[in-house]
Image (cartoon, one colour):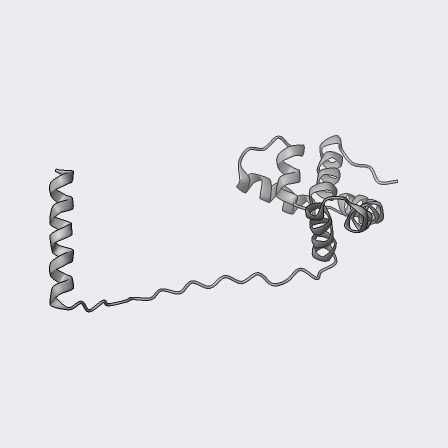
Length: 128
């Protein structure tokens, strides 16, 4: 039998429910600072007694998510349950972001430049 302190149990149960250690720590430890919650969550996931508790409860939650992914009436709930199952089984896709900076030089003909200057001048006069 695994023994957990009340806050550790609350954390573990919230982690099983939410799947996010920082959110579980915010709730269980009443933490408002996200950095502190991340630290607590990360540390808790290394504690042998919490790991053992989570491993013992995991099949129940996996069955719940499987059921939701197959039978939920709301497609959004089905999608989220399926996504959570894939995430927790290690099949989460790699998330990549890429920033692209592009400098664009616009070459305007004389007529276009004059029009832009005219409208800028009119706009400035209205604002002043």
